[in-house]
Length: 114
Length: 114
Image 1 (cartoon, chains in turn purple, red):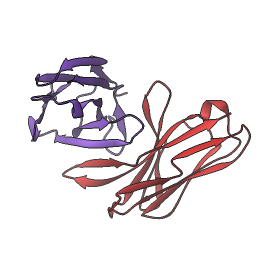
Image 2: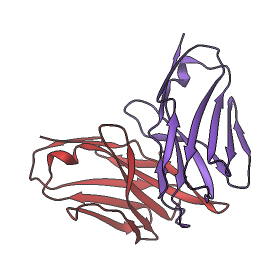
Image 3: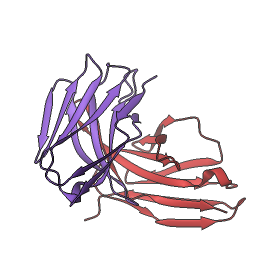
Image 4: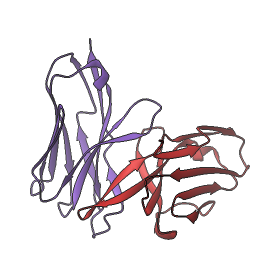
């Protein structure tokens, strides 16, 4: 059974700082890993989907890396801004080839202080 | 230009009532999902439909019944509501990206059972 862990659970940084969010998963037989952002009282916004054949995926100030063999992914946010404050979730498809089913971590609550 | 929409956004009801939540996507996706996010913010899949056919049915009480009248709609009906059903329910849809299904989420329906 796939399990996803995100560290840290919460992070508070001053504006402008670069930061890294961590995600680990127990079953490395995945097709992809997806990073989401959730604002308070809102739905999830897909930030990046990184395929199992990729090691990195970039979108603007965001860079996600994937190391399947070690069961880890990181989300790097450059030059953080107050608008980046949100909960960041990573999710992987369940093991067994059922790539419809996503298992989510509990998220990292990021606060960027002006 | 809403992608995945849900109604209602908020639902407050008493124990024992029956209620429905509706979901629609205009992305042309063929797979739709219902997720439950509990008070601890943990997000867990409940159901998934592909081309109107049920493909995922997690361990969910049979008081919960999804219905997909067509590929663009997936509704969730809940009978005999209980206090423990209070949560935020998210609808999602997905498209195939490589061998992966990138998921897009609706804004959520906050259900409060009193």
